Amino acid sequence: MDKKDLKHIIDVAAGREPADLCLKNCRIIDVFNKEVFESDLLISDGTIAGYGKNSAQDAKNTIDLKGAFVAPGFIDGHVHIESSHLSPAYFSQMIVPHGTTTVIADPHEICNVCGLDGFDYMLKSTEDIALRVFLQFPSCVPATPFENSGAILKAKEISERIDHPRVLGLGEMMNFPGVVNADDEILDKIMVAYNAKKIIDGHCPYLVGSQLDAYAVPGIRDEHECTTPEDLKERTRRGIYVMLRQGTSCHDVENLLQGVNEKNERFCLFCTDDRQAASLLNEGHIDNNIRLAVRKGLDPITAICMSTINAATCFGLNDRGAVVPGRRADLVIFDDLNDIRIQKVFIDGKQVAEQGKYLAKDRHIKPVNVSGRMNVKDFSFSRLNLKLDSNNVRTIKLVPYSVVTDERKAIVKTDSNGSWIKDEQDIVKIAVIERHHGKGTVGLGLLEGFGLTNGALATSVAHDSHNIIVAGDNDNDMFIAANKLIEIGGGMVIVSEGKVLDSLQHEIAGLMTDKPGEEVADRIKEMDTLARQKLHIKEYADPFMTLCFMALPVIPELKITDTGLFDVTRVKHVPVSYNCL
Image (cartoon, rainbow, N blue to C red; front, top):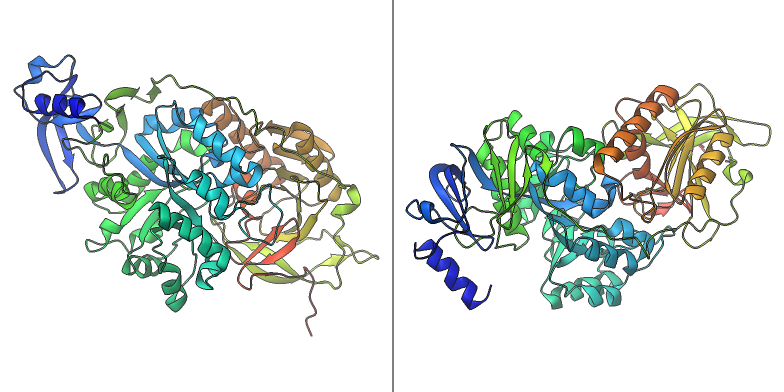
């Protein structure tokens, strides 16, 4: 804002000049005093000018809200746009009508595939859309050194982008052992953020005691991997903001609410992290977090504060997060404080949604440098053969409604050559196939508790390196599914009895598609339903979302990468079979 603009808004506030817009008869949510007051609201040049009633008749445009509530636009503190399966433009179209006006996005999914090309695509594709998108530069590409990703981004690459005004800092620091052990390369990345006066996002599941102290020392700003009230308390005690996450697979709001109280709630905010298009369509976005929290007993105004001023304060976004003079006119309008359903949304003083309909006209960016990322070599049917040294095996055991897994010991069947064969147990084969550099690596393991029978599922959305991940009860269907993914350049595939039952192409880095959100949501819903009906996936597991997290070697306990079975707790690869003596 320059001096001329500032003078104009002051004149509007003082009643000397007419406002661009007057919202009449509002019940305004005051996030500082945690109360509601009645007033008109004056807006000019996309900025809130004041509450004056006397200038209402002079406004260029007036909307009578007839006593509706007015709150600041909601802020998602941590999201991966790629996990919606949508391009940024269609992501905006999906979430803005739900009241989200700002997101803090970590594009490490596309950066793990495309490196700086991916980061630049996300910057460019979020320039001319209604949703306000701030990025965090991925701190861990790859997530660990124990797998093959599409790129390696070090301190040098971070320094080339971190000064951008829409880059808030370093994305989630998943390499918490590297921080705790003062790894030289990790400290180089942290120093880039320090020198640029930018923040550092956290990611440290189950870290406690002195190790958590060591992790907090660099000034980790926030954490979205808490799952218990005790986790929340330990992190807020160290000045770390805690995000209550409600994604498609990770449902943490209800558990964490038990740790939220009047003493620490200012350090609590909401995020979605990973949320598919179908979840956005059927349940909503941050408004869903708020409704869930209120239903579980949280004061509605506290829930709104967590989704607005708390998030703005956490990330230093002092131009938004409150309905006060001088801040951005990012506003949401609704009737029922106890069951928030968004009627209207304003961003920068312009109405962009009405009763669920998106009104903005966004620019879609062609994925020129981030498509066709499928370079698989030396993959054959025999590469799926899992030969065991013994019948005693480690399995990746699903935890219901979570991406955390347990390590379980089981006894399985093998053929005369010592290769695993399916038996009556709920155990299937899982494989990760390198797709970035033609390295030809294939990691094999066993997945328990997925329920999958009579086929295979495959996807190129496989956190965080996003190689091909495929699970199945027979090698033939797994082989067909993997090859179909290679053929379409990435996406999602379902195979049964040697036939491709369905597939959905993701032309942007094998992660996203530039198709309308409703269409993608319907297609994913169809595929999820088909997977449950034909392949019998358990009700507590989202077929593709759960599968894609089985390749994430930073969330305990066991995961699978293109280089083999990985023990997250011990930070090393382990064999599938073991000697029980």
